[in-house]
Length: 75
Image (cartoon, rainbow, N blue to C red; front, top):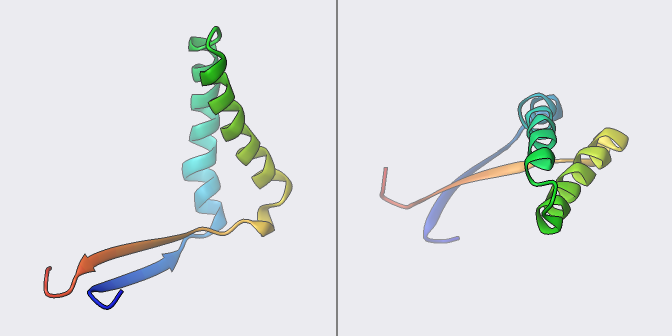
């Protein structure tokens, strides 16, 4: 990354739960109903639900990071 500056940080797990997993779970309920006949769509929903379930079971094992990148000399 010699041609880029970067910043990183982590988000508290509570923020992920409140602002990502709760709304995702609510959307999944509606998504499953509206795609009830589509096995591919239901498989996508199942993978998302699996991630939520894993988070609930092992919240201390989760961690997220984000990176903001920009070219050197560009604001």
